[in-house]
Amino acid sequence: MSGIFEYNGGSIVGMKGKNCIAMACDRRFGQQMSTITTNYQKVFKIQDNILLALSGLNTDIHTFYALMEKEINLYNLKENRKMKPTTFANLVASALYERRFGPFFVTPIVAGLENGKPILATYDSIGCKSDLDDFQVGGTGGNYIYGACEAFFKPDMNPEELEEVIGQSLVSGCDRDALSGWGGVVYVLTEQKLTVKILKTKQT
Amino acid sequence: MQYFDNYLQSKGGYDYTNAKRNELMKAQGFKEMPFTKTGTTIVGVLFDGGVVMAADTRATAGSIVADKNCEKLHTLAPNIWAAGAGTAADLHHQCAHFNAKLKLQRLNLNRQSRVNEVITKLTSKLFPYRGQIGVALIIGGVDCNGPQLASVSPHGNYVYHPFQSMGSGSLAALGILEAKFQDGLTKQQAIDLAIEAIEAGIFHDMGSGSNVDVVAITKEGVDYRRNIRQYNAKSHQKQIPYPFPINNTPALRKYEFNFEKQELTEVGQEMEIVE
Image (cartoon, rainbow over all chains, first blue to last red):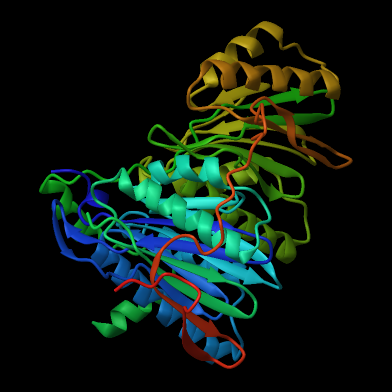
């Protein structure tokens, strides 16, 4: 048997732009070599200006997302205000570290816009936050997408350019990974709106 | 049962609810994903009037470089810094925890934190966990007892010594330190020695790389130089960029959610929409 993170497969990527941020994920949900469904959601809108992408074991993706929804809803009710993206990024790190000796098998990426400034943070499965880079990847196809990102990325892109670049990086990377693919979804977040584009990819 | 769960939740600390499930999975043969480790070379050097600590900036996950420029020098108190090697998540969260704990103590007692306090608190926390919390730290600071430098191992052992190195590159760094360290160094000499020791780690150890961070602590204050040396800057810029034409990637559907109006609309006359 392979690793726990390779059981379901899937890839995610996040990229910073100029006053905008983009997230992309594939759509496959599999059980080792079988594909169960090709429309599994891996990127979640936590708040108007915060996106959470999760890759890893799908049951833990579902559980962790539900946990984060609960936290942010409770926060909104208790504090009567929206949560800042940097606060949410720290919340995810703490929630993961709380389970240090029985972790969730997820590698999250948090993307947000704080006063127009893009925030991007990634974590390993026990909450080591890494938020200084301009693009982050996760999932089984992550290492292949790293290569595509290093080649295609340039800093300070506008939302249209960013959408193209992140889409192409995701598709190129997932083509080399057997456990990711079967479609892609690109989310581009700006101050005014969130654009969701469902990509047409090779159906394998 | 619910009462017990709530009580544990409010107490804080680690949550073990997934531990049994994970053990079962491991017994079935699944391998876990490697945690981000810091590979690392970290050094500390005591000089006349203070202490210098230096670290590289590479974080690895298995054999992939997870972070090319992470920060391994953490503040525990205004006059005490820690350089960390080991599991990155443990380092980050334990250092943040002790930072807060020491701050509360300073507010209560109205006294500067001391290095031996930090060592005692750390080792008391680490020992019961039998090395499972993977932090190997070099603690350095200047307090009422003068400049002090110590290292703490994940099992809770501590050693005071005028020069220390830890991490996967520690042997490379130790070679430089053993050869060139003397008592009574000046601040600049100590900084140069520390940088040389980290350099040895960066070039000879696969787990260490990228840049060097240095912090020098004296009674007067703290001098933190992030990326004082950079060995791995990109050697060339792309001459011809790869611009993608806008709206070129074919899409099945495109939606837009406008925040002000809070409404979702389907977009897409300009693009090739294929069913």
